[in-house]
Image (tube, rainbow, N blue to C red; front, top):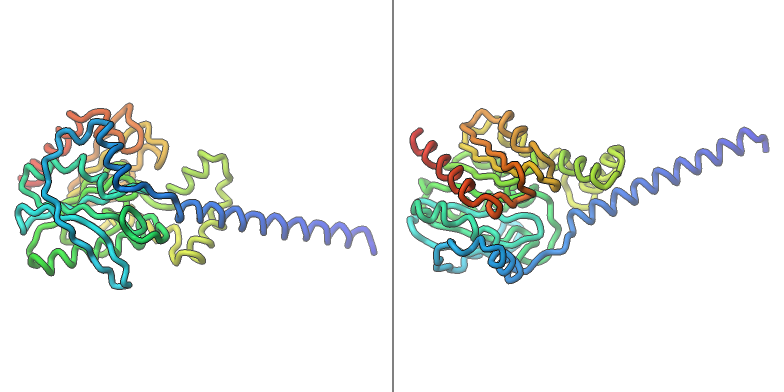
Length: 303
């Protein structure tokens, strides 16, 4: 056999091997993202208790409220009822549980809001299933909102507070639900593509792995990177937004709230916390955090 053909065969085999390796690496990364370990509710509660962020949480009478999704999946949650015409839903972050919302309750409970805490799909008390980083979770939130209004009336006011993936989920629901009082998004990622690109950079992985990962997101879990984009969700929304993020956020990348602020035409306040890491603003600067939340609530009530 001529040396040229031998070289061509070897080169072709190497190309096939490299492409196969890239698909394997992409699959491993996607499974790592969508099949994380989760923390128990007890662990989440004790962690925030040890941080001291629950000392000013009002004593809530929590009654169980489980939400059955259209696909038969059960979302476990609790409700603390005050005004039955005014609710705020707390959406926790990646791997966490509904106990993570407790540290934010006081700002809204004192304003008369009824509180709903719930575990996102695959988290907390729920059956272990894949995490879709806001894709299916936003659809779940849409259904929860529908069930609240079915129970308490279509005119019921509903607001959202989310942190991290929960913030992305709360913003993502704007693709389905426009009738919301406001959204507080703490440490959100602007899109799943931006998040994956940033995380790949932290791991010193090349960006050309992203298309291979995108293939596996679709193949294994039924959605693509661009299907999860808070940037797209807020673009045509008029729901008031409060965006908060630490400038040392090395999980989703700094400046995400600036991207979101610049993409929405809604009333928006964005606050940076210079020395805070991901979702640590409430712990690092409790007085400033409370001032920002109350300033936002005062301003939107005036409108």
